[in-house]
Length: 241
Ligand SMILES: [Zn+2]
Image (cartoon, rainbow, N blue to C red; front, side):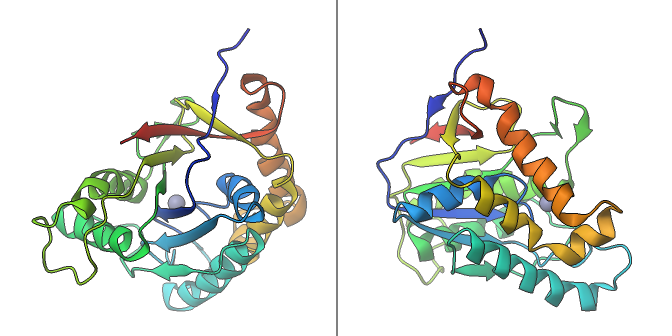
């Protein structure tokens, strides 16, 4: 018997997902977002970059706008209309006070009860893959900025009022999840959400894009089912405050 994951808390209304790149949320998490928005919850996305260095065959100046369009379309499929880009340079984001300030400002603007970010540990995939520097920097800065956002004496120059209402921080894509969302009703929108990143995927693989995204999104949800009562699941490591 595998250790069972806890269901994600339900006592929140607004969530803010902050990640480094277009597609970071669509590789799995979007199925959970689709479940939440269908239930009337508000979810907004903040992207640190436009992912302009993500397509080998396309110059960044061309790729940035393409990836922004694909991100907005992918978000809309999951019921998310509010998508912001912070215009950090893709691939060379540095962890530090300036990044924490940007993240704290985003949290103060959106005033979420739940903050979502992506795995920022050194590795992913059971320790088999080295994580990217952008994921490490952005994830750490988000974790730190949750407290910064609530402290009026840290970053007092941010225009938006301090916000100390974040109750949970959920890290997606981690090897050490604690909680899960049953995505039975969100999986199809999760698949179509990732499929909106078509230019990115076509450059990434020779496989048919729909086959590729369906295999990936449905596969990871099924892989987690054994730890969540047999239901297809998106998993998170949850931090309460
Ligand atoms: Zn990424």
